[in-house]
Image (cartoon, rainbow, N blue to C red; front, side, top):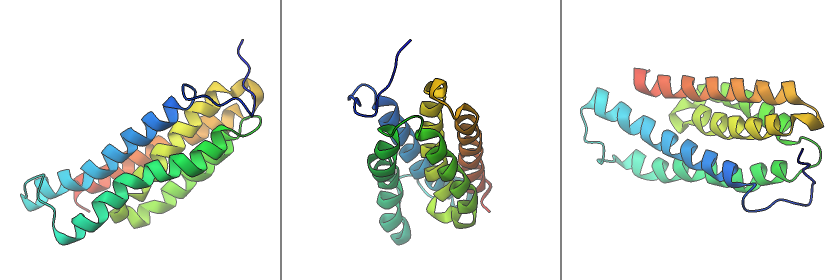
Amino acid sequence: MTTITATSTTARSTTLLWQGAFATGVLAGLAPRVNAVIYDHAHIWYLDPEARVLLPIVVALPFVLAGTIGRWAWRGPRNRPAPVGLVLSLASVAGVVAFFLSAPIVLGGIAATLGLEGRRRADLGRGRMATAAVVVGVLACVGGTALWLAGI
């Protein structure tokens, strides 16, 4: 059995965090573009003035969250990714109101990633909280994507 200490975070152990941030950034950036292709009959590479401003922000935000909140949670004692993931997943559900900023996708993706790490550390406690973070985060991410694709 492997034990994780608060001071031993290696590049390998945070790989999942950065993979989750990358996948979240791609989804958060593509969902609005696919919406424009489907409903506005625009080319996927055409960015209107609003998209030129928001797209880089939306794509960078998961990396900022992973580098700040994510790394802080990852390095925390016991199973800090579980409660942090749960808080982010609940914020992502509230973010459905601000879906035009891809908030449910961004927050839900990072929340699910932290929840997965929390599940890996479930032997340290908070396993159910980590599972809730994964489930709610994925649902928010899927819901945010569905809102973009439905053109609501």
